Length: 168
Ligand code: PH2
Ligand code: MG
Ligand code: MG
Image 1: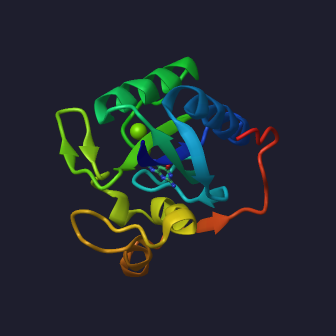
Image 2 (image 1 turned 90 degrees about the vertical axis):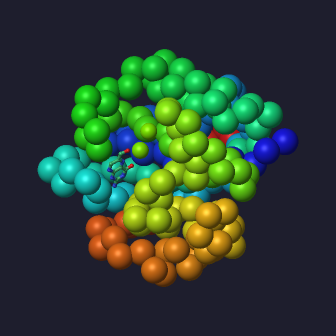
């Protein structure tokens, strides 16, 4: 079993419902959910003129290879009728692989660890909640240190809400 960290995001439609469904499908198809962060409401990074995101981080244990995991994530996003139109733009669901154990992996389609995670507070803050001591295999830094060093000033606000059907 491999431990994988995923980042979930939604800023279109019923954002809570989208996260909820994505968690269900991840648990069904991608791997068993071990841990999940709170939900955060976050200012959009990259393209500012779009609705606020909900973001969260989860860890799963899986037997899927990295490329098979990516295929599975794409399947889930497709099943959910993913609405992404442009890079960094608005979408109903986005599931990104942050870490695949401590593996370093590079292909045309996939880079692990996620190459931009250290620049994104909307990724680091939720991740810090569930795995603050996890060490980035390339930089050797903990999530906690990366969060402290992160210069992203966009708002990342922890919400006091839980999902309706928290069946995982
Ligand atoms: N995802 C992006 C681009 N910008 N900003 C926030 N706050 N949250 C996201 O999940 C996000 C983003 C591209 O995947
Ligand atoms: Mg993304
Ligand atoms: Mg993505």
